Image (cartoon, rainbow, N blue to C red; front, side, top):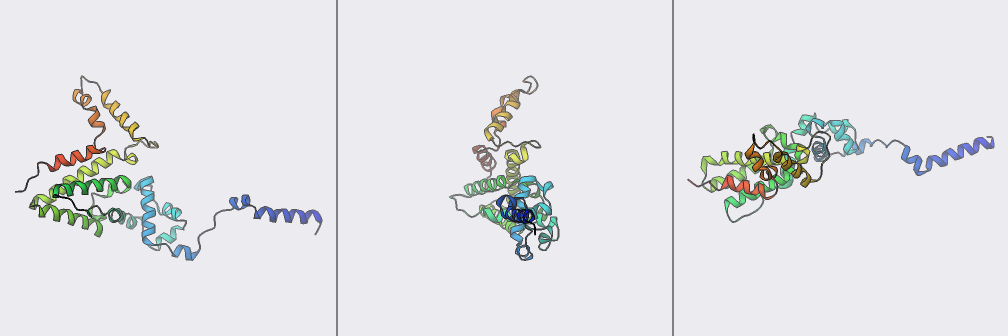
Length: 247
């Protein structure tokens, strides 16, 4: 082999071993054993991550697989389709947060703390909020929370009023999360992380409304802007629970 050819060949081999060359190479596809090691829980958690980031509309089998470093076929080995994955997301979050596992001096304080913890869980995972209204997405963890809350309410003597009160508290909580969560309240493409700046903009919007047409909106601007935020959420729970009396 001519000397010049040997030098080029040696140089090519040396370059192929350099860190820069390795970085330029495409990532190695996961092996069959690596894909087979995927679990249903790992896939659900990857799907939850994507749903929180991109919304349910942006959730795809390809994105789930990409987050796991696997192929879409590896995901299909565990779930028949996207709908089956979506069906497990609510129960995954409910199981993680265990919102009813606490003790309080009174039933009203217990209910308040339960729904406050529920709000924290939903704010952390806004991707599942559109699923909460359909029982088709409820699993054993979700039914367990419902059973526990109804047990406390019925045990307090509320009887048939227990289920309507649960729905009222749940609707209030979901509404507060929908307003507070940046992932749901920001406009398309906006990446707003400063909560106080969001509140300032909201208050300014109400304050700058024509006072002649909307005098009560302008007067209530600070309260409207902070609906569901911080202690305002707890105060709202108290307003729901305070008039409730045992028959």
